Length: 121
Image 1 (cartoon, rainbow, N blue to C red):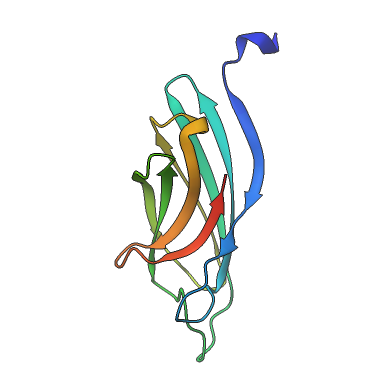
Image 2 (cartoon, rainbow, N blue to C red):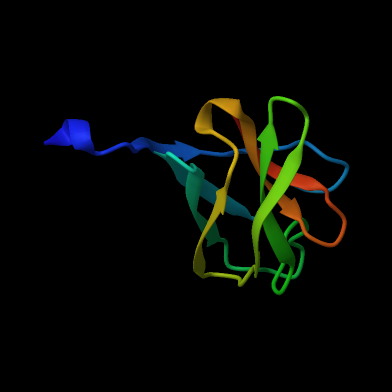
């Protein structure tokens, strides 16, 4: 009986590159969000381009982080991973923040906090 399942999954949403002084991010990402009684689970897939000598932006071995931005301005880091050229990374994280209170999901450079990709909700 579907009425007994308290969670709702939002279909995959793609993320847009955030303009910066550097070149565009060399990867693409999408994520799904699942509502739970205790908060929200976010599962993300990032696909990285094959690197070349002139590529800027996220490069091999760059440490990235997934961040949930609350409507109240709060930022919650949900996970970190390393970018690997030509590979796909899958990561997920959870927050006690209800799905309706999440304003955006971001991929940021873990070391600097620079926002590379973002999806406003």
